[in-house]
Image 1 (tube, rainbow, N blue to C red):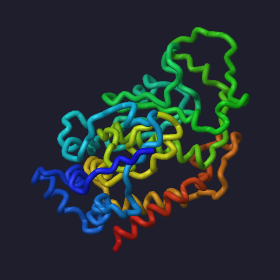
Image 2 (cartoon, rainbow, N blue to C red):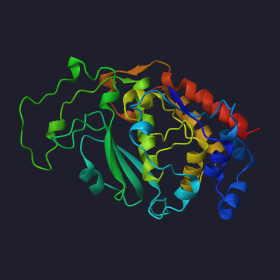
Image 3 (cartoon, rainbow, N blue to C red):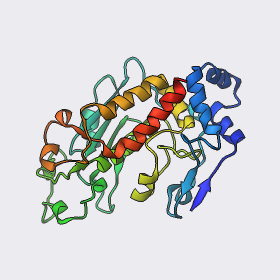
Image 4 (cartoon, helix red, strand yellow):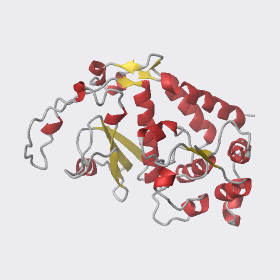
Amino acid sequence: MQTVRHSEHTLKTALISKNPALVSQYEKLDAGEKRLMDEAFRPDSDLFGPITLHSQSDWITSHPEAPQDFEEFFSDPYRKIPSPQKHSIYVQCIGQILKFLKKKKPEDAFCVVGITMIDLYPRDSWNFVFGQASLTDGVGIFSFARYGSDFYSSHYEGKLKKLQKKSSSDYSVFDNYYVPEVTSVLLLRSCKTLTHEIGHIFGLRHCQWLACLMQGSNHLEEADQRPLDLCPICLRKLQSAVGFHLKDRYKALVRWVGAESIDTPTVTPEHSRADPLSLPKPVEAFKEWKEWITKCLAVLQK
């Protein structure tokens, strides 16, 4: 196991920048927001900590990348930002692919993200993918099939017995697919993947500063070790792009965990096919994260 630990000076530069305009922008933050962001520099902080690598197969070791600090993010000419005309994020539950999403993209959409419980195979030569996205078109599709604990059980056996030619508009191959139990762990993993990928659409690259949702993950174990929250550096990037108050954001997240939730760990497959808006959320796996948000709110409201 290896710990990736940066100096206070390095983290301050990554978060605040040496650019006078960006330093001035940081100084204008609400006092509570600055107090929370400054937790990044505290070696004894219980809110933000260093990155821990557990094996040589982890993302940072396997996929060397140049780190992206706030100044690089802010000055990136290709990153997308919401506008009054395109400000909505649409999450579409489908069994189809990117072309469908592009055709269905509403006029006011910043991006459209399709989610499915069907395993994704973009080409015959590929094993599988967790997701695919077109950042230029602002669309993506992500599969949470392999996040279910029973993915490799016989219940998941495919319905197709032989190769069948289908037209480009025929999606009947997705009919009657197996829907697993929506456990609290599956929901937690899904939230991590979805928010991580939408972060990329906003222009956030993989984080190499602190333990963070925007860290890359090379396998399921590494994804599970990744936190659900953004580190201060990535949080400032997203705040700059979207323009929210941290206090409002964290209060909304606490409400989301609590609203129409259940403390039991699963929603049955039969319920999974019902109207998703009418289902209670299994949030048992979110308890630790909710406690973390409560600590952040205490710092913000001090």
